[in-house]
Amino acid sequence: MDSYFRERRNVELSTLDFFTTQINANWTGITVVKSFAQSYKSPRPVVAIILAEIESKRREIGTTTLDHTYLLRFDIFAKSDGQRQDLSDFMLSTIQDGWAYSTYTKNPANAEALIATTAGRVNLVRVNSDLKLDFDEDGDEYDKYRHYIECTVRVSV
Amino acid sequence: MARIDPLKISVKYTGTPIEVKIKSMDVKFIGPQIERSLKGIRNHVIAEGRSYIDSHRRRVSAKGFQGAASKDPRRLTQRNNLINTIDKLSRIDQDKNGSYFLSIGERRMLDIYVPYWYKINYGGKIEMPVDPKTGLPGGVPGFFDRGVGPVKGGSRGLFHYTGRQFGGKKFKGRSFFMIPTKPIPPMRYLSRMARVFRDDMLKLATDMKREMTKKKK
Image 1 (cartoon, each protein chain N blue to C red):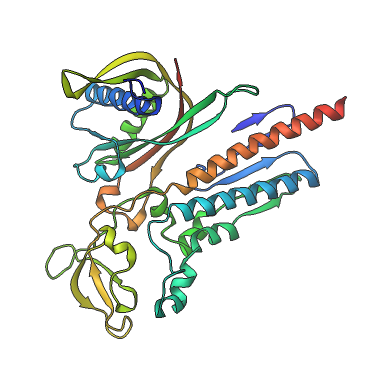
Image 2: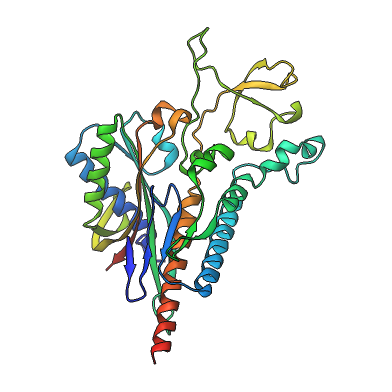
């Protein structure tokens, strides 16, 4: 076992790092979390970024190499419908260009810090969903302005 | 809209996005073969959905629940209600031009028969109506099974009950106000079904393309 984290963990950390930086640079007061349940522990606006599923298929006939694609889910909890539209548009336009893929390892000097080394890119394969969630009268106030983006990505190193 | 030439297969999502209404494929390729293939895809998508929902259940279902509760017809019918309803609402149709349509699910009908389908798929908090007397969240009416104690899933901390019994004859004194403290986690079964649907459609397009090439030779 090498000292670096494995690819799927690196994808999640790279994605969270990238979007946290982007959101903080362009917006104020938005919380980024990495699980659905955590979203409800912070006041809106909140963006939950979740690495949901990994699909592994043979890269080509005759080899044992696997080709991994990652399913990412972005749950946006906005404070107003306008903010939902702006934020979802911002997220989508940020997703479309892909982002840096880094390998992470623990910092020997500080157990709580990680050292990131850029090692490639996370590229968008396709956007599976981009839609407003409408709970009608069944929804809680917190879920009133929700948006859902789901996309498939792949790492190129 | 995705188009794969030269077979003129177009995948068209009508009305609302595939996540909301998994629907609908317009195949401008006439023949019994395509109908058979679409039936196969429909059955595969439903089977995958059924398996996915079963494996992502958060609560023990009525089956296997011992005692009088297992004879409660309401609980027994709940077991596979969601996927059974989606199954019933899925069909293959042919329009006047001979195009075949595969429709899976129909929001209007799902809202009637399984109104919780949306929240189970996308997750969310349960709305808490305000008690007009106190101005505080009033809780959601619910009851423990036959009044014999919390259902198995209750021990996971998903529900807390306030002890304020209410109900009258309808609930036979078994009902309480419950205060859900955690959101319902999203199951995303529609996303799973949509991906199976897309993969199967691409495979069908490839198979048809191969067959057309063979015929040309």
